[in-house]
Length: 437
Image (cartoon, rainbow, N blue to C red; front, side, top):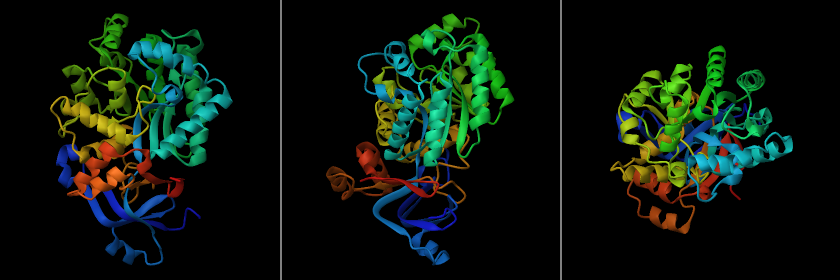
């Protein structure tokens, strides 16, 4: 089918008209029990109640998905695709995890065939779980970036990604230099940034593995290419924070390390942000930078509990995305990730409303990547990355659905009980890219 041809999907539809952290859940969501979304040229051109939309497009015969929810594809705000092979590895916390699992796995990604296979597997798992966009850490090897973007282009997916910059405190086989990391990243930006749906993210892994010279190089690179993104890690564990303090004694706190090198501004996406000071939270708000909440990773590696109520609530809240953080994260499923975010909130006396959870997993994560005018919502003018969720994917869920009171009950129950079996199909730029067998 030509991309220029209209097509339509019919079922229950969910989209956002506001930020539930600001306007409240009831005023943030548009839900249609019988809705239609119309796609043309890979873009959504109409969405609304079937009774209204059908009359505006009488020539289009919709694909009908009864007992399904049609919504934007999930956006994973922080993930390491080379770590897919070490998901569910036993027994370590952050710094030991890096040395015992992460670095050995990443050392193999200079090999094209190996990287191609890993990238292909990773992107197929994304589609299986309704993830249409992600912000991805590759490895220090330029080939790891090339493989991911090539495989993403082959599927039509929008991906943000970058070569890890790492010139100290890691195995020799994974080290670059300040100059080589700048040169290789610049070459990748020239080759891939803005090509089809590729977005480049400048990627110093985290402060302990970058020298001051390399952080300065990252800042200079971002200044030269301001339309790119920047991603790194921040305040994931107490041991990490203590290490940063020793390495950068002149800095006021962890965030100040990045701030000193021009890496704190809109388009910066900091993974974790669990143990933040009041000054750091205020600086994040003022800068327009974002945090990516990685709940399954934070609990699996034992790093701590993200303080959603302190960081995100209210009009002045920090932008927050939701992330699997594979492979420290223990599941590709965004349902599992939302469930874990809810449970972390509960441990702190904070109940994450389902409207807020689904917002974080779609439009909120898109905002963290400065893509919230393109992806993350079922709305006119947005790219047609759409998932169809089977609301009765398992007998237990089907039974629970028969007692659901309203759409909030439905959404909450799905985020607690559903898994990849709930993803019936995924459309990427309006073309079907995945269908559950």
